[in-house]
View (cartoon, rainbow, N blue to C red):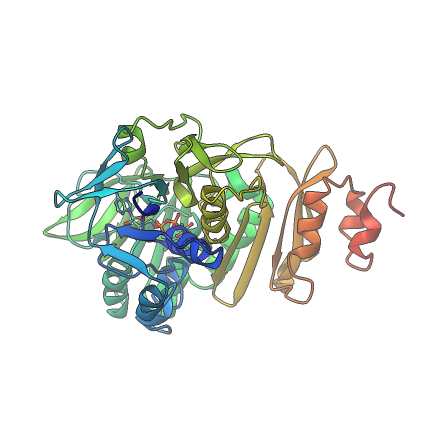
Length: 413
Ligand SMILES: Cc1cc2nc3c(=O)[nH]c(=O)nc-3n(C[C@H](O)[C@H](O)[C@H](O)COP(=O)(O)OP(=O)(O)OC[C@H]3O[C@@H](n4cnc5c(N)ncnc54)[C@H](O)[C@@H]3O)c2cc1C
């Protein structure tokens, strides 16, 4: 009988962590980790933070050093995009015409930056940020100290704005919402983050959309729908990401309309007993929420890759990690847990002005999400527990940092 072979499509964080787990769990068959990029699997968060700032070297972004793959007999097939899945013959086809046979397949193809089709979008100096090469190109541009416009005041846009200020670049953010992050975090916390950027010299044009990019050959700036002209030598478009689902779709796997991800159950199975999906691309049935979620965060790829690997080995358990996210901007470190929304009630515990506080999002008095800024003493764990317990809290007590978090739960004191 042919040796069991797991083919992992997508040599990113979820894929590399899955390979690690397969070996750690004693899988002795072949593992092929196939990636479209030429790079060893690497972590993306530094691309908008310390790698962009030149404070972290390339090798330190790698999930494992090159020797690890040899030592663990994980066959890296890099610079090789998979173009189709043949479920009837259990094979995948690579762009170079090679076919790989699998007994089990994992899809961890991640996501790609959403493109904007604005007039001038093809000009030099109009950049996106997803991979190492993008980050290096952007770093080169920031080193010039020339003006930067960031289209999109989401996390990546904000982190790049902070990095650009460190390089001394004049920075303008153009964001369609009245307050950046408003839809996800609400006005108060969105305003807090926005004011932090303004304090560091960023011009935030909110409630505006870019109308067109100006320049000939190289970009010179952009105009907004409110008629402003923003000078820029670099324009970063950071308007979200689209999961890479074409391969799954072509292979007849379900992709959902709500989350745009590959539909998997709580064991991360993609409707075919031999195929799982994980990471940014997977829309997984989440037991805690009772619906499908697609989470585009580092911690999710880190935990979901291994969970999918265990599932392939028949040792899966329902994947129920709560969404967790972190970001670093200027001297602020933030962590979030749960699913915040701009429509929830927000309770701040501590002083926003001191840049050290917790915040909680409540729905009908229950904690659905929490965050902290620079509160590394307590961290995110207490918030996580409140979310996990679906705790009903007394909002006034929650807002009072002198009352321990255990004492804010209604009925628990
Ligand atoms: C700039 C940046 C900063 C970020 N910062 C944070 C942060 O601060 N905190 C946080 O929580 N999250 C952050 N994230 C998100 C986090 O990095 C992602 O959630 C994580 O990388 C997802 O891992 P993944 O393995 O699912 O996908 P990816 O890392 O995208 O890996 C997927 C890989 O699959 C490859 N691939 C796609 N299609 C094919 C194919 N057909 N054949 C072969 N290979 C294919 C891709 O080329 C890619 O290399 C950031 C992301 C970016 C881009």
